[in-house]
Image 1: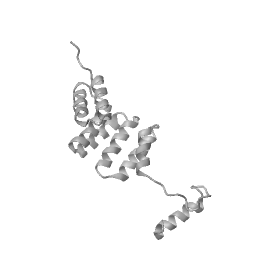
Image 2: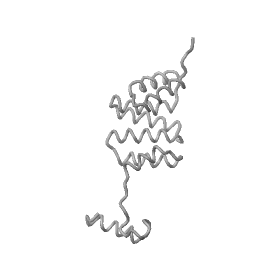
Image 3: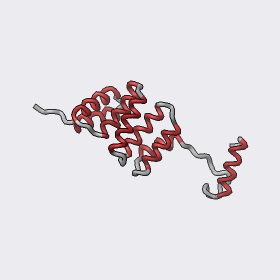
Image 4: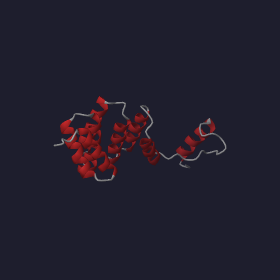
Length: 147
């Protein structure tokens, strides 16, 4: 008789999550957590709890716990950022995503940030975006309501 390991359940949960099947993913992560106390399981379980059950506060606590135990894993930052977006807290989500990128490159975090942060074209297009003239003209125009 084959006993299912937490790793198998975790992989099954990830597959279900990738397929948009939130309830099976949630069940897999809960069973995996019963077998093993693992920060990755906490993180993905938190994402499922927020999306499926709407328990955002609990999900944030679980993700923060995962970050305390494994703060270098960018997936935890991605999941926490998604939960914060679900809670309607875009500014904090952006900060969390950017914090995750400090620990390594994660294409999914970059994609999330690109969806959220769209930059306007430079005021003077032939100058570099970082040119002080463009920076200060952009700030002045924004205050005046022109941009």
